Structure formats: C-alpha cells, structure tokens
Length: 283
Image 1: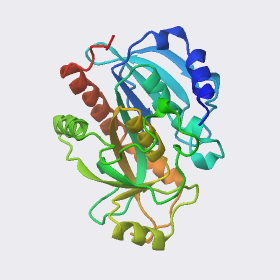
Image 2: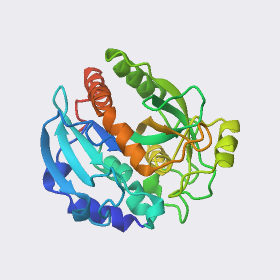
Image 3: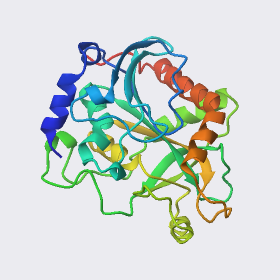
Image 4: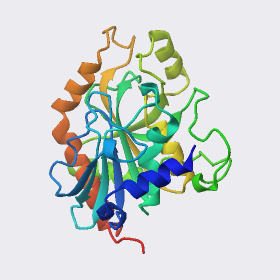
C-alpha cells in the first residue's frame, strides 16, 4: 500500500479530528448508519473530502466521517459506510477507516456489517459477535513491499477479534435483553451473491455468516496493534439455505426494521467501554 495516501488523508481532516483523542472508532456497514443517531455530533466530513478515500457508492453507506461525543463524555470516530474492493478501488480506500483510526491514536475499532446467515439456527435479525474469520481469497491488503507502519511482515492472526471486547459486546446486548450469538465470518469478494454450492462449502469449513467486507479492515487494524471487535447483523439467509432469491434491497430493508436494536447495542458498547476507563484519552 502507498503510505503517502494515508498521510495525505490524515492531513486533509479538519483539525478537530486530529486533536480529538478518540477512545473508540466505529465502522458502520450496511444497515448500521443510524446506530449513533442519539449521540451529539461534534464534527462531520464527507468521504469525498478526505484525500484518497472517495465517496461511498453502495446503497446503505452514507459516506461520512463523524466525531461524536460518547455517552459518558470523551469522543468517538464514526465511519458511516465503507469502501469495498469490488467497487474497483485499490486497497487504500478499503482500509482507510482502520488506518485513520490508528493514526489518530484510537486504540479500539468496532467493525460492523450486514451478512448472510449460513448456520441453520440463525434467522434474519440475529446479531453475531465475530470470533474469527475465513479469507479464502488470495486478496489481501498486506500484499506488496513491507511497510513497518502496518506492523510486522507476517502479522499474527490468531486473535484478530479481541475476546475481552467480545465480552463487552455481550454485556451490552444483555442490557437490552438481546441474546447475541458468536460465529465465524467468511469473506466473499462480491459484488455477486454467492452460489448455493459456495455456501455449502463455506458451512463445511466452519463459517456461520458471509459478507463482502470487514476482513481487510480487521486484518490491518489487528496488524497495527489495535483492539478489534466485530458484529454481523444477519439481514438474510445465504443462497440455498431457504431457496429464496437474494436482493440487495432486502438487506437494507431488514436492517431498517431492526435499526433501533442495533443503535442501542452500539451506544451501550460505547458506554461500557467508557465505564472501563477507555474514554480517558491516551496522551
């Protein structure tokens, strides 16, 4: 990856972002954009005004970076939407939220997405805490000449998703009476939905949910030494599980019906992080 792109992106942010010392960062995927609507917005910048990022092009992705006040004070970054590899962009825009989060000194990143359910016990509306992922494609944002800014040449991937943060998510769900399950996310490059044969194969390999994002950002954030948590909202059952044909609009519609639940979970996660002292900025 070209580090100059990230340096230019950081320099293009309004000063309020660079001076904020956020204690958490949220990457909100499809259907999650209303998750922080109850929090006070301190600053906002469209992705198109961040050098090297570019406007979001996918339905359900607003394409704005917010700085919000946390439930107990302190500040948090909120990336409303993401860029995807299948849009035709290079890796830099895809992993931009993870890199900017790291370079703004923020220690914790929560990545969210809408996903197709593979495990037969899942249903649309379920929320899955990610404990691991499968990356079956050779595509990786860490390919190319090694840059120490992105961690070691061969970063450990045995705990990309922080177990303690997973417990914080579980506790946030319990506050709302939500029974969150956990599972393994498998990356599908997209933009076409998967075939029934692919979904059967993913299930045999241990995947519970499938989507077209999250893994590159989580890989880079973990390699940089950040704590990462992941949430998948099951917006539909994957191809062949029920026999229903898949439509991208159904993903957004299902998330809209559950938007309030998703918002309460995210805000309670931020609140519990702050209660543990995470809202005290590192100097």
